[in-house]
Amino acid sequence: MTMNVAQEIRKYVFQNYGNLISVGEARFDDKTKTWVAELQSDYPRIIHDDRPPSEKMLKFLSLRRLGTVRLGENHAFEATSREECVQNLSSFLKMWQERAERIIVRASSDNLARINEAQWVLAKVGMIISNLSQKQVILESELESRPDSESEKIRRYLKLLEGLDLVRRIDEGYTYGNLFAELRSQTGGFQEFKVAVLSHLIRERYSALKELFGISQLEPFVHVDSCYYTPALEAERILYWTQDSIIDYYSELYGRKSPLRLRYIIGELVEVGALKHEDKYYFADEKLFSQMLDMKSEMVDIAPVRA
Image (cartoon, rainbow, N blue to C red; front, top):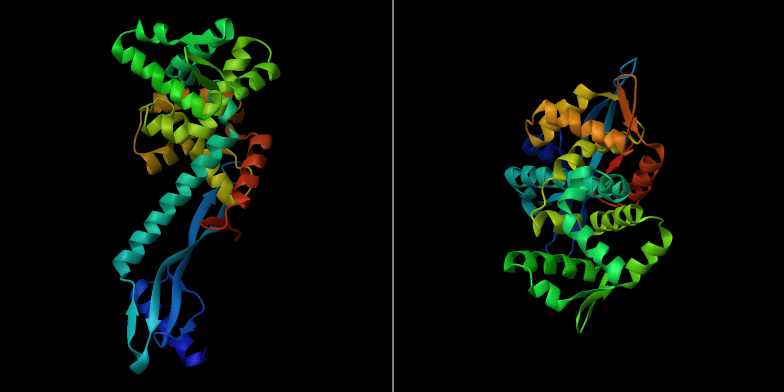
């Protein structure tokens, strides 16, 4: 690639996309006889730590494949439109937020499973595993004796648990699966076993619980957890935030919600060990955060890079 071509492409990108978009190294396409370069961005994030001396850090999200620029004969350009490039940038930022949320859910599913709301909204799962613990089988006749809407809901949960090998379909109804027996042998009392089952369900099927089962009560807990851990993942270090910082960031990401409700959720996350609290600061559980960093390091795209 000649220096003139590189300069021409960089100049075009700066003039047409602004300073948040950069361009990768161009390659010559023999088929089209054009130089092709990928649009990309090291998107800046300012992350703060509330504990004195109230440090601010500049980090970057490495976003690739935002579009392409082609430079052909007679110096004619053909490129992804600025509007499409900005839309792709917004989509990748949203994708990073969703991936970070998945990491947080997977790492902290044991903690989330201990929250009262989780056990309440997943009470049907508790009922299923309680029955299988006591009599090893849920008969088809027992399902049919329930009102249709109730029976259908229980069957949907049974199908979900069957996909995780927690229950198994038999001629007369349902019995426990291999994972059920494994988790039962690894836990003490029923409450500990139930938490283990709910944790596995949240870790492996959180999206299905939200989208297919309409369980939204857990979402604010995951979102508040994400409001702390996502910036910490971007900074790749434990941050110390006040309650107000978490609430303000929640409003920025997800829209305004009652501070009364958010303070309660923060307190519940502390109670189950998802967050730590000392003086006026909230900070990461070291073990959970280490797991999250390991998961993040496995992501090859849309991952934070060091400053």
